[in-house]
Image (tube, rainbow, N blue to C red):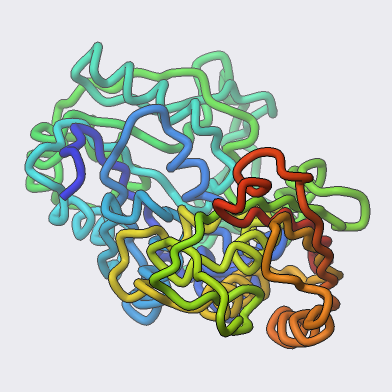
Amino acid sequence: MPVQPTVAVIVVAAGSGTRLGRPEPKAFAPLAGRPILAHALDRVFGMSEPAQVIVVAPASHHAVGAELATSIAGAAAEYVTVVAGGASRQASVAAGLAALWPSVDTVLVHDAARALTPSEQFDLVVRRVTESRGGVTPALPVTDTIKRVGPDIADSAGALHVTDAAVRGTVDRSELVAVQTPQGFPRAALLDAYAAAAEEYTDDAALFAAAGGPVRTVAGAADAFKITTPWDLRRAEQELAPDAAPHGVRTGLGIDVHAFDAATPLWLGGVHWPGEPGLAGHSDGDALSHAICDALLGAAGLGDIGSRFGTADPQLENARGDVFLTATVALLRDAGFSIGNVAVQVIANHPKLGPRRHEVEAHLSGIVGAPVSVAATTSDHLGFTGRGEGIAAIATALVQQAT
């Protein structure tokens, strides 16, 4: 069990998102090659302090949401809880509240559709809730002129129509703000407010205030806009564009080191080397394959082999390098990346790679689905590789993000 956090973040990702015009629920629609929810969780896990992260997914996507959330969390997956949402946003938040750990006393509720909300925004809300013991919502000043229009502009379904509506007056925008998420609350007071709620509210701050709870604002963030329409989605893609190299081409570097272990067989580059001492490690110690995994994951911004797979998983004990490579390639594919090529330099006194280089390259290229070149050198008897204590491998990878 992880250290019990006092903060929880409920990430509401159960909406259908019909206005986005996508077949999948909105939080699972692709944004720059990854689901919107993945970007939102990246920011949540960027918080300065540990938090229980409760993802509320559509019942139809519960398993998909759980797999995505745990993969994004990596080594922090033990902090993740995934629950099925309800028929309304309010019901979905209630489902998240029911999953709170006993240690939690501050609850943040966040819309996954605000996927680019900075991590600092979460930290700020937590601090203000701790200080005030009331509700807190990020807010931005309203810059547009706001008009009040006639009451005859909504249809029977409540949809707003503004064509040919009569303007009744201008609203003083100096008293108005546009609120965002995450919104934060003391746990006990928020639970009481939900228990007392007799109608649906558009956000949790309104529900909390209706129950008599005080709500104050903190400065919002321009990046925390809500992805609702295809235009919003395109805007979010543009916001993310500076993080990628021109034309979506990205490079990664991976380094892995393992000591020799004469009691085990040697697997290097996914190939068995009879008569050679093996490599120590939780898995088969295949430094060459592991370095490729780190290079690919780093190029795609998907973490590293330790955070993705870790040594705590008993299923990976003695696992071959092929297992990690296959899983890594799948992660990149799911994130919208194609692999251009991989180059690896092995530093060791033995085994002699030259006679089997083409065999290793062919094997690895088949798994990666792109050219893999392997070279080898020694360190002229310097360092641990020169003393024959182990093997080091350095890999570089070139990947391209789908446009």
